[in-house]
Length: 372
Image (cartoon, rainbow, N blue to C red; front, side, top):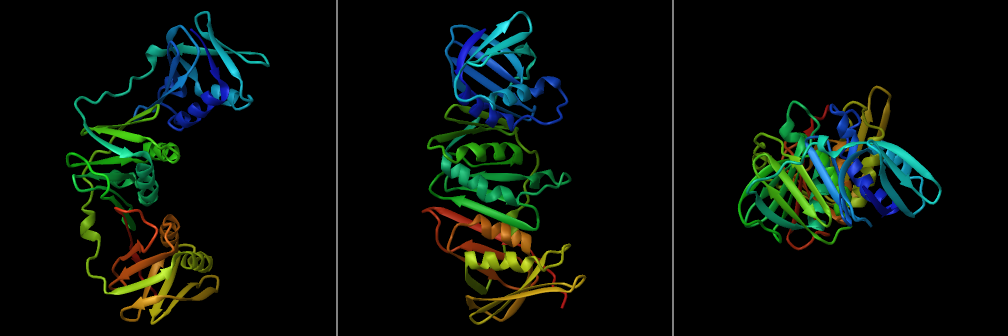
């Protein structure tokens, strides 16, 4: 096996794939990248058994072979090179030699046959989504997914495809985000729960891509194909909670406020809140929004006033400042609308401007009981 490749091109692909590899693998072979060479194309794969990701790099070669190479050693070596052609050549039964302008480096390799094969999806359903839309959908929702191992269905993002729209939902029971697109649709109705890890990998590489992503899925697995990357992952098994039931329909109290000023106020005031509850209090009356927090243990207290447009009964409601900041930070609009009914019912956050045609974002945050 022998091939010549650009060091920076190879490093760029390997850094993306490196995100798949766990720090403590049950199978030692999973600490490696799989190199599959067929003439002028090198297919590199990484796997943790649940998720397998591969990408194709153009190389100069006339041989074909399959070997597994230490991921950590290769990444650490490539990071130190300026951009230059590198020659990879297998020597004997278990060593691969890398030659650069500076010198030669030998590392052990294993047979590619030991590497687990990616799952194949027999007769899957297929939906095609523009990469930038899928990237936005993931980044707008993934922060709201839970981390509770006891409720695995909530630790992923729920994909809901229909002939009218594509909907992506994430919740951890304290906050919920629903992101819909009516400008992209699927041929048939489908629902599945994607785990966080593959979504974070996709989020990292979809941002700058202009291409389209082909999503293939069945009951157990999903496969994402775009540019020169293929990602196959196991879906989270289980039924997603009925999220529509928790979104309150009647919300007579409506607060419109400048997003950036509100976010800055929440961040400032929350510094003075209790370190256990992170509770801040919103008090609305007329055109004034009062944001306050108090930490009784340390006699810390903060109070700010913002001008706003408020329609409804005067009310006070408590929120966890971390959840509120995360949500406001995740929106890009100039103004946000917060709809509320009672101090013990969830508040709904929606952007007033800055959304694309056919794009809808609904964020829901559960209140915190106020101790008067």
